[in-house]
Structure formats: structure tokens, C-alpha cells
Image (cartoon, rainbow, N blue to C red; front, top):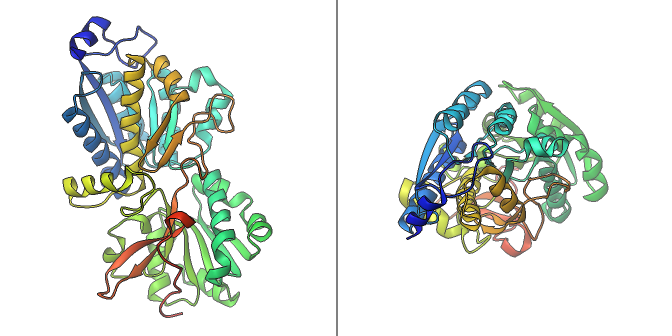
Length: 408
């Protein structure tokens, strides 16, 4: 009956401002760098969600099809494949993308196509700034996760204030990669860590793309006798961490470290990740909501691996699109925008709500204990020497206390 009704309501997709209605087949597009664990989690999680939805009757009785595209984490490629999805395949909504540079490269295209896009992966606050600057043009963009870079900085200050004293981190250096996503984090981090967390910050260093030798940097940190290197690293994070461990540096290491978030990272680095810690959306065993562990279990059963943070957001994005289409009985872009602005959705990573048009970050995911907040975990080894991601923060999800590196 639902499919028949959908046909009577009329077709059309999210492109343009045509009439509403749900077509016989709803088509979604997922974008991500396929050869990266972050992109793989986006594409796999979208496929998992679509499979579950089809098994449960589809969206408003309509079958759901998913088209996945490899962005290669390159802005030019991202633009090309986004156009394939929207202009060529006329999908009803898109989701995903990992790099902030790639997201910003298609913001104009999203506006032109008037097709709702739910970001899963890029943290730049420049996207909601565009919505604020010209709402009617850019209103089709939303971010399910992660929290934006400004909130990631807030999170790092909050974690430091709550945990650094018991960790013994009284003097730190802040190390960030020189990419767009870290700019809002480093802008005020030194003053805020000193004022709100009571720690001495010896320096805030932005490390350039392509840095292969961290030895001089670590020599400086040891000369300053820091207790820890507090990080904001993604693209160059593996090199930085492996050298820290192999050189048995006399300071701790962690903060936001995207490679460390990979459930396979400990084994892949032969245990170099021991005692490092990172912020992430959720871990496979952390019961952030009642949906977190079941999703991770289903992902593992389907793909014989565990998701990273982008996967949680992509999975939630598909279900939020489903809820919006069913609530409005439409795939029209404007209709979906209105519904998403009012939506409160319990996802795998927390309660997801978006800032409104007049909010601090229009159409961005809200941050805080009542919304998406994330967790901090540390790699700790069990009695068999196997590494596990154990939650350090927040209090209600904490599994373990921080452990210093075994050689320190």
C-alpha cells in the first residue's frame, strides 16, 4: 500500500524545488575516500543502513538504492563524483565526505543542486558559516558528525580540565597538523588550557603536511620537560605516533588523533599505540546510546571489522534521511530541510539535533552532554598483550584510569 501511495503522490527527487512525493525507489548517494578506513566506514555504514531499511520495508514503502562514490580525498575528484550523483543519477540526498577541503569544494554544488547533504567526517566550521552568510542558498547542507573543530577544541579543554590533574599532566605542548580543520582548535587553545585546565603550555606548534621526521620536535619537548604532547592530528598522525613510541619518549601522547581511532590500529602498529589516547564519536563497546553497540556488532558481522567515527555518523545520516522523508512524505529538498531543522534523533553517537538558521552554527550538529559529545579512550593492553580501546571520559562511560607509557 505504501508503494502504491508513493506512486500516486508523484515522483521527483531532491534536486530543485519541484513537487513533493515519494518515488517508487528512493536513491541515496554516499561519498568517501574508498581506500581510507574513514571513507570505507562511510560507504560500508551507508550500505549497512540501507540493507537494514530495505529488510524492514524500505522508506515509506519505497525501495532504497545506494550509489557510492570514491572521492579519493581530493577536492577535484569530490566535485566530479558529487556531480555524477546529483546531475547524472539524480539522487534524492547525499551523505558522507571525510576531508574538510573536499567538503568545502562542493558547498557551491550542494547549493546549486538543492539536494540535501548530510556530512559525516569533515569538521570545518566554514560550512555552517556559509549557511549563516546566505541561508536560502546554502540551507541544504547539514552535519551529523563529527562535532565541528570549534567544539573539538572545547572538548579538548574540557577533557584536560577533568582529567589532566589525575594523569599528572601539568606541563604540555600542543601539536597540531597544519590543515584547515585544526585552525579553530589552535586559535585559543594555549590560553584556554592554562586558564580553564590549570596547565602550563610550553608551545602550540602547527606541523606541516608531509613532515616525516618528528625527532627534532620531540627533542624540543623533552628539553622543555613536558608531561605530554596534546595533539590534533589526522593525516600525519601515524608517523608522529610511531616515532614517539619507537623512540620511547619521556612524555605521554594523545588528544585528537584520528589514526588511533581505528580499532585495528594497535595491531597494525605492533603495539606502538600503547597508552596513546584520542577523542572519537564512540567505541564499539561504549554504550553511548542503546544503538551504539548493536550497530558496531552488525558492522563487524557484515564486514569482519569495526567502524571508525565516520561510520557512526554515516549510519545515523541514512536513518535521519529516512525519518525526514517519511515525516514529510516527500524527497523535495526544501521539505527535507524544514524537517531536519526540527528533528531530534537518537543515533549511535548520541542525541542528534541541528542548530537552526539563527543558531551559533546553522545546520551543524549540537555539542554537549545532552547531544553529541564523543568519548576519550586510551589503548591499554590486557594480560595477553592484546590492545583494547578503553574509555577514559566522560564519567558515565569511563572504563579505566589513564596509564602512563610503559617505558616512562
